[in-house]
Length: 132
Ligand code: ATP
Image (cartoon, rainbow, N blue to C red; front, side, top):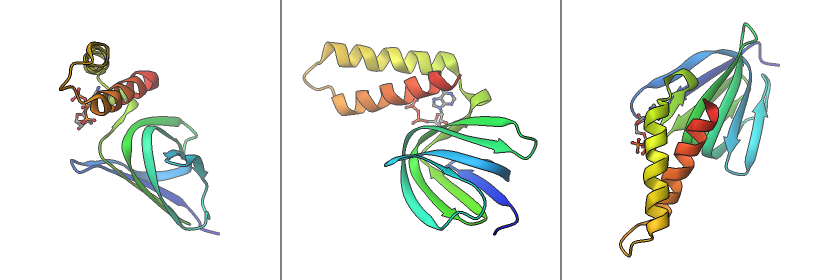
């Protein structure tokens, strides 16, 4: 059994989390999964959603994850995300504007609107607002 479990959350811009944790629950593309220390090794893609973990003081922490990949080892979870923010770093005004923009595009259904892109933008904004 591994002694400890470490969590690393990295985006192309920066490292968001690098600390010892008790448990991680992540938005796997096949469904949410939880990891405790000693978990068997696996690799999965992630969907847009919330990652939560408990730090060593028992506090629950929440992060927005804009999809990516997770590598699970018995003593380490590495999350490579397209973008990610801790709950306290989520800008509600920005997410609200992004949500309104996407909703407007979807409602207007203009011929040259990329609807899939608008749907994904809406999903990101709604998940961000949900965490706050
Ligand atoms: P927007 O349309 O407002 O740019 P987006 O969903 O297209 O939102 P992303 O492509 O996910 O943005 O992220 C681009 C960068 O902006 C990333 O560094 C991400 O962490 C940051 N970011 C995006 N929205 C927010 C937000 N509401 N609060 C904090 N950071 C954000």
